[in-house]
Length: 492
Ligand code: BGP
Image 1 (cartoon, rainbow, N blue to C red):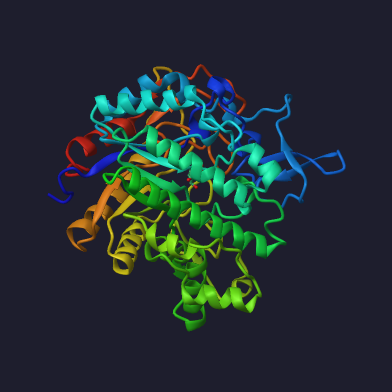
Image 2 (image 1 turned 180 degrees about the vertical axis):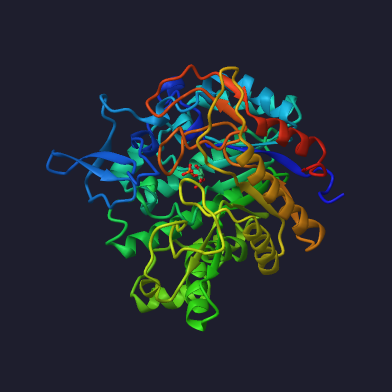
């Protein structure tokens, strides 16, 4: 047997991309609810409509810098994909049933911060929101599925973003602590697996996190990173205190990174990129302190982080139990990319890798990169790992009978599960679970599209909000069912 008994097989979603019902049940608006749809294939970004300090309205791309004092608004005449998403809020029983049918024993789901605290910083939590997740978790448990809960997944309360500069402020950090404590207490005994902050490394400083002026004001961006680390460490510590049974992990977007060539300059370029993009975040959350190169960088740039007494210690006390990450693709880096004279193709960032094909959205398809990751992370930290996102975003065609023949997705899954198997069997890494992204179709985080589908279950909903939300099983559903029910033995 390659995979240990009790290996966690499941699927992953996030509330802001899946739940819909964006103001129902006492929920308040989040930053994600103010993001329009975009078009990833034609590079049209998602947008915020923003009220400027002088009262005028302007549009900004989702990763643009929004000036201090400007507020993201929700315009009644604009279509926002998260408002309905794929309506888990009204389909949760059916969906959890489908998960069980697929053979899942874990369900990665996130709690919408604004369903529990509508403004993020309210004095009392919203009982209706708390009850909703309680019912969801109970249903999971009834069907033999462990909930794996992300505390904060791209859904900064809009009020905290607009009025308190999101995670750049202490006010928001304190509000997060209350929120984390509330859910640990309420779901004690129902939830044993938690992730603190989704993709903390790409989520650190853009408006998704509520932070204005995150590009021009590096001091603020670094303060935001610190606050996020403190938030995560606090959650780990509080979660352990409230229930010693809790296992709490970090969550990092951990693509594989390669040097373009054996030129030492390219090799060093990759080291620097990897430090900045991923290892920094792993090092702090696994080891409990900033790595030397980062300390030097902050000194050099004259950036002084404002810390409260005890926070350095908290980072050490709140190190994680396991390392979980999303893996979709790899990127390649050159010291002098301009000399390579290319820009199109499979590069998300970095330069084109001539050895790899890419998805319609330009994400490289690189199964071996996952095995490389598993080895590198295991060598560095020696703590259990979980792959909490992986999958292929593709355009699916649903046939009249509801079937979807997604052989391309089955191929992607098979190759990635094969390398997981190799990493466990041959490399001896400690892998505890696998929750592919968007096991059921959800709104894309990056582009706001519905047509970029990852699911094994199809949901009838399109980019303009048309569809009856009916669910149907794709061919990949039956493939994953076979894999899961055989504990990863039968993957052909
Ligand atoms: C990660 C996010 C997810 C998810 C996934 C796929 O960055 O944690 O929320 O959406 O990527 O990305 P996309 O939806 O942009 O295709």
